[in-house]
Image (cartoon, rainbow, N blue to C red; front, side, top):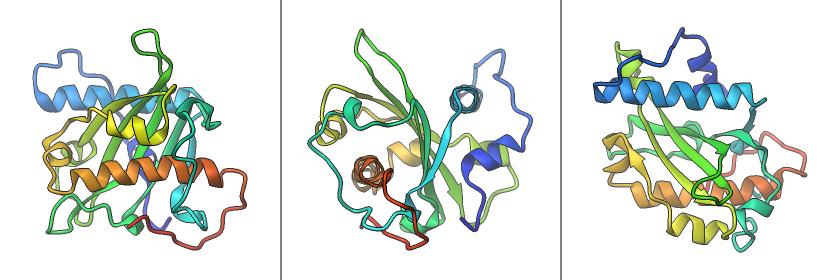
Length: 193
């Protein structure tokens, strides 16, 4: 990883949950602060998906809750995965926070996609608050979870022309990571597309 991951960038700033989330930016800053704190306070692990060989295949038909995932994990994609959000190839998905969380009496994971830019703007608060979230059911397979994935959040991600490809990348990353967790990571870069 030649460039800092989102957790590394985020940890270097002094952030707090805005007391009044009366603007879209304040809500996003509050959401990502809570996600980051949940991840770091829960002993969050960071996995660079680019470090696994053969990362393009995984157990898509196994229920998410049976994959052996940590309760709080950050899957780093970085530029290597080329998860660009527009044709300009400036903003890309840096990674994915996965926090184990129950919803409506069912076990699953709260997912938070975060972005990075090739050329960061002068307004780092806006850059680092660019997120989209969703929840996946731990009792269904990765494929089914992704087909039911209700992604919401920043329009840069949600309204992206590549949204379907991004959601596909998320599903493949989850299954590839779990298949590769017992393997020894190498520095060989594997892309999903």
